[in-house]
Picture 1 (cartoon, rainbow, N blue to C red):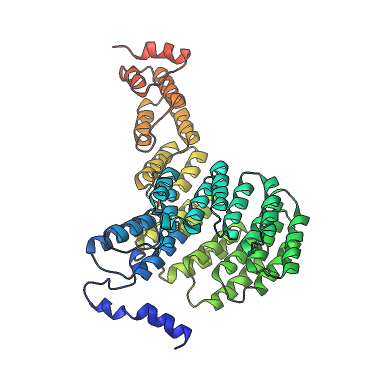
Picture 2: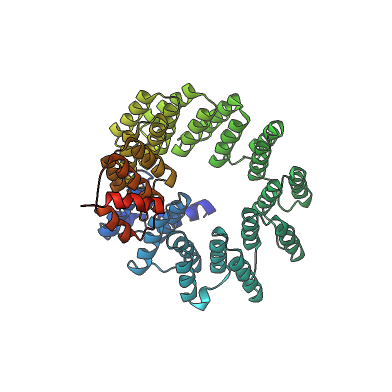
Length: 494
């Protein structure tokens, strides 16, 4: 039996069981993304699946967790991971436990991830779970804990690969501790730890952050001389991005040609990087050429590719091109993705073409899609700039009501809140100010002193009185300025 036949056999040998009512009728991943990729829809489908008590295969769960993590849908991924092991009897491997630890850190915080790690059986505390915890520390930029855990791994004489070193290098790059990176590279060489393309990419990025373009080029030359790790398309994508950020567009395009040569497997991400980076050089012709190659390489063009292209065309001021490809995407009856719709709405709003923006939003509604908080953020920015404050308040109300796609609250910035409070103060409009704060209260727990002082001035300017304001300040434990206290003496009267 060939390798492919064994793979297919391993994946399909239990598929006849789907004919049984005990099993889910379709692959779990397809079920969860039945209504699209937004988190609220995925959560709904996950809850329906869990309530159904339908069975699925472990490989389906593993595959689904990978896809959920790739899309940054960490909360539903954690829920699936937990319930499949605690209620459905799916036994976790050490690799599964490492993934679970990472999901806990991303959704519940480092403290809960540490607790999970401590409670693991000793047999599960190997390089996989240690690296998962190290990655959590690095992501949170906790250098002290990351370094201590790395030393612990060395003390335990674990078989350390390039992965933890890569994590530390990334941490040092993001915390501007670039001086520590050469020692990491040297330690890897001393310990004869096999480098990988990711390590070289991180090293290149660190040198670029120090504005050492020649150093970046030396790393690529070292890769070529070393021979153990050949530069791949990600190397040249990284190099092209570094050149583009430095404004070296001729070198950017040379690196992009190398990227294309090394994309033998026709990877989706490579095409998207090419489009983005040619966009950064301002080369519209090459953007379209790569797009044509992309369409030929894949029988079906995913939403992420249309999103990437349309955003690139908008940045290049090719709005007609963006509209054309939006219509092409729209006519294909895709799983609707509001990010693509929002990109075009943003372009129209920036151009002051509100009628077209509204038509685009209505078209999405007609297809069953729903505006999200980002949609209203776009309109909010426009209305604030144009001084249409009541419409701005409506946008805030809608954004708060909808929340973010990951289920978290949408919170207006302090700057937005004070801009509107300043407007109501100027207009001496107490009722609108109070109505606005009632809306904001639904997502902001602590309004702060500045907001209440503006409200006090609004009451004073309008000649309005209110005993309630004094009580609210005491309940909120807000201490206002002497000037505001004097105004309160006037406002807080019978």
